[in-house]
Amino acid sequence: MATPITVVSSNFLAPNPVILIMYTALLDKNLIMTVHKVNGTDRPDIFQVHREPMSLRDHLTLVDAARNPILSFRRQLITSSHKRWVVFKGKSSDSNDILFSAKRSSLIQQKRSIDVFLARNKNEDLCDFKVIRNSSLRLDDSCTIYSGNGATIIAQTHKVGAFNLDTYNVTVYPNVDQAFVVALVVILHEINIDAQDGQQLQFTGSAHNAAIYACSTFVFLHLLLYFMHKW
Image 1 (tube, rainbow, N blue to C red):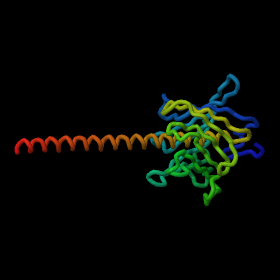
Image 2 (image 1 turned 45 degrees about the vertical axis):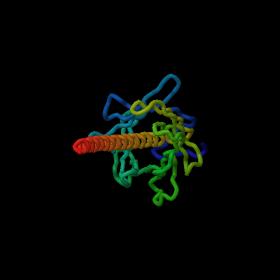
Image 3 (image 1 turned 135 degrees about the horizontal axis):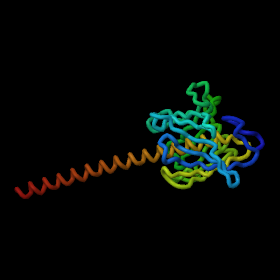
Image 4 (image 1 turned 30 degrees about the horizontal axis):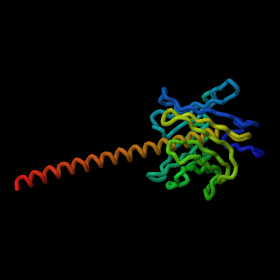
């Protein structure tokens, strides 16, 4: 890629394609993901994503290999069914330190895509970057990340596994900010978790309503038979 793409820091650029593997964590309740760089037989840990204590999943932090905070993620509610992730420099939550924000492109799209807006893009008429899922399957977060509104590919991800056993194989193109790409994959992962939780709640509610209906029908038929017997 001729023009470097830097959103977080030029320290995370490389002249050649970079392969990253992102693992979801299971044993530490405050550790969301670890990110490893594939370098021959070595796979050094270069990033981690932490959940801030007592914040559920609304406040995440991306740290580097030395555990220095790079980005802070805050989830903001736009409507009851539409959320936006706002990403700040370091541990900041000051509006002056916003780097970018991301939200679902449309509530009705079959393939859930994400629009990404840099802080300087105040009008948000067009997104600065776009994440488009490669599949319409709910549990598949494999995606392609574009600069502009789908103009140039800057990274691709392939998801392996499901639910809390997810692994993402990420290819970051040359001269593209690796920390920025990792942040977008994290946001996509969190949006998918929201969708799974919502689907589960919807299923639970439907099952509950069906049980009430079945019980009411049983009582009605029982009473009907009782009165018919009396007649």
